[in-house]
Image 1 (tube, helix red, strand yellow):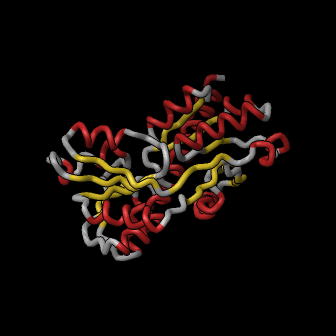
Image 2 (cartoon, one colour):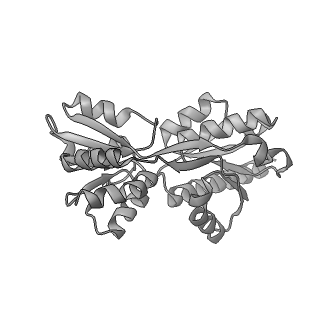
Length: 255
């Protein structure tokens, strides 16, 4: 089975290696580039002060975690950091930070079910994130009475569609997109290169929210992985293969 990997180039290596180890072939089509936001000395100082005065700090992605390390070091942060998924948490743990992540599904909804967020009225919560993105965390925290601040650390820049050379690519068996932004970039690239028929291929995404985005953009067969991790993606692929195998066996018996 040939899998299309759409992660940014500097983040695709581990996913590709894990897919190969699981027996899958891959083709990489990076659709976005993660670009750190350049901070002036004044902006660095302001961000450090924001972190110092926070009651809770949440990093929403591995990119946010990487870009925030310098700020956290300057702030001499000693409090636990909250993360949505294990890959983000691992970046902080490697630097010696204490981390809290939700159990089970790794998303904003389960993060807010942690006991530390049961009563946050009047607390200051800082969200480490990229520009744009989902506002769910900010809205829910504000609804609970928290003062919410964002420290935006990077942007997601679409790559030049013409340079991707999609027209010459062999049709994959399965598409993957690990974020809503990537799904939107994939849909745009397919539409602009005359590959709209690829929207009928199976697309594996992380969770129901991203599945809804994909379906709204015209993808016909969207599978939501249970977890937004490499393990979750591979598990979804295996379940899909097993279901396909069972369907084929049933069809054969019917004949």
